[in-house]
Amino acid sequence: MQLGMVGLGRMGANMTTRLIAGGHSVIAYDRSADAVKASASGGATGANSLADLVKKFTQSPRVVWLMVPSGKPTDDTIDELLGLLASGDMIIDGGNTNYQDGLAAYARCKAKGISLVDAGTSGGVWGLKEGYCLMVGGDDAAVSYCEPIFLTLAPKGGYAHVGPAGAGHFSKMVHNGIEYGLLQAYGEGFEILKKSQFPFDLKQLAEIWRHGSVIRSWILDLAVLAFQADPDLKDVRGWVDDTGEGRWTVQAAIDENVPAPVITLSLLARLASRQDESYSAKVIAALRNQFGGHAIKSEKE
Image 1 (cartoon, helix red, strand yellow):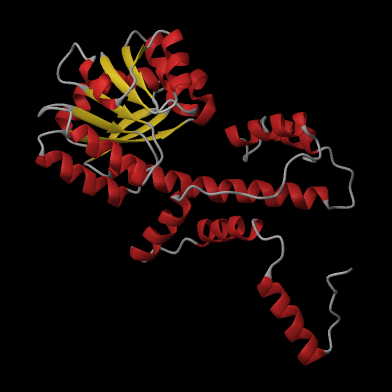
Image 2 (spheres, one colour):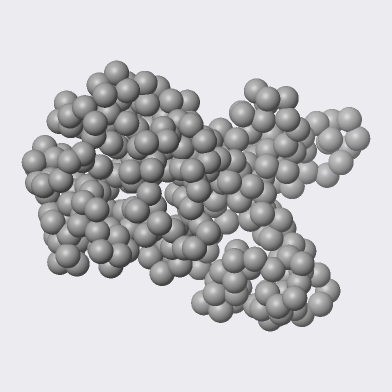
């Protein structure tokens, strides 16, 4: 198939490479001319704007895949494409879009006769080699037409049409919420081991847990690589970012009256990791001193 790829960051560029290797023709665009040049050197057709990308299609209907930051960048890109594409064309949003924003964009596209497919995409920087897990939502006809693209990007068994518009982004949101909980559990477990009385080799434990253990996983495989590169993680600051999906999962759980304490607490732990000094902890220390005479550590200690 012929398709356009908008956004050539860590995932978009690798997806472009995997698609070309799979026999597809890719027209690539990014705001970075260097990123476009790099993809063009790998066999893509470079474009210098969205308008240029649309003009370079030789097949119809046109399919444009977006791998741009969620929120306004995605909305703005979709809206610009709506002025360039024609009825019957298709847009695939493979970014981490909030499913509610995705449903609003789906309605805008449908009003123009353009299909919007939401592809929850997991695989990160390893996707080029391992393939991408794809949770795809959208109208049956559009998803069916784009299926050769999904089958090329995904490993065997790693792609499914999971439901109507919005279902792809919603399932990817929950997928990332689960990821938050898994990462937190591994992090806490390794900290308990490190601070124990025993001289554990964390890489060694992570390695043997990969074989026959009930907690073996791909995340554990990556832990081995991390400890191998930096056994004490001396060059890693304990500051953990989030890109929104955990927050949205917690909000969905609240909206649906679903108790989700592990995912919620893992999100809060990420927020706590960003505090150099917790003001609430200062208040608690001061109050303990007031009512019980408990010792306070000064800023100088």
